[in-house]
Amino acid sequence: MLVKLFPEQVAERWDFIKPAIDNSLPLLADDESPDRMNNILESLLLNQMHCWVSYNGKKINGVVTTKIAFDDATKTNSLLLYSAYSFGDTNKSDWIGGFETLSKFAKSIKCSKLIAYTDNEDIVRLFERLGGQSTTFLCFRL
Image 1 (cartoon, helix red, strand yellow):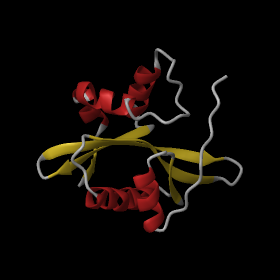
Image 2 (cartoon, rainbow, N blue to C red; image 1 turned 90 degrees about the horizontal axis):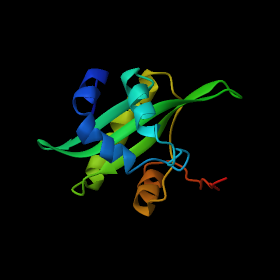
Image 3 (spheres, rainbow, N blue to C red; image 1 turned 90 degrees about the vertical axis):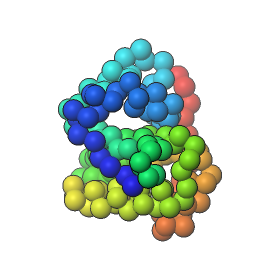
Image 4 (cartoon, helix red, strand yellow; image 1 turned 45 degrees about the vertical axis):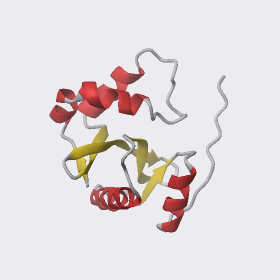
């Protein structure tokens, strides 16, 4: 089960959440910026990003962050799955349930798509099985 945290809950649990986010940052995040985690925390506290925790029973088994990605060319919003980290005991039903929760949330905030970056082949296959399309994001450090 995927549950969205309120900003106050993020602040209270930051010591637990921070390493999970830090270990699952997308390539578009500047991993050399000393302020990157403080900037992410600020975005979460200002509700510019959202933090979710996945429960399998009573135990937290994952941390996910999302944010709205606005395409100014088409004037459309998508919900970007910014980071996803599992603590090892997740299964496909956890991912499918989380996908359903994020899809409902995305629709409720007027997003037309759920988008993500990943190089995890299992996630790509699951996303495609659920009806999604995949592409490759390329990054070259300057």
